[in-house]
Length: 157
Image (tube, rainbow, N blue to C red; front, top):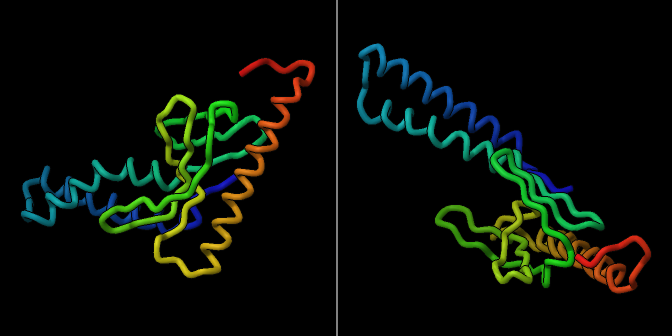
């Protein structure tokens, strides 16, 4: 199972900005609006659920497939539906990262929430990340081999 290694930092940050937003909302409702800072604080209340959605995300890999879980949604990918597992750099303005991408038979690839690694990580961390992805790919190959053997009690998926 892969989880957010910086969960504590994410929770502290979300708590701070949520408190800021709550104080700004109370100040605004009581008529003590201070302008930009209160407006910015209130906007954090709208963003906090998405921050928590990313903070609590996890990925489970087993012989049945990959389960991607977030508080706001869950996805299950069977190994029979996955054609390839690759790593790519997903670029963003402030946080580029090495991410795992599933290529599916249906044609639409999906990003997994974890494992991931910051783009500017040092070589030992990149090597560990690549070993994790190689482990996922190995589980996929083993599952494909089991499905191809025609074990009793298995269905065509």
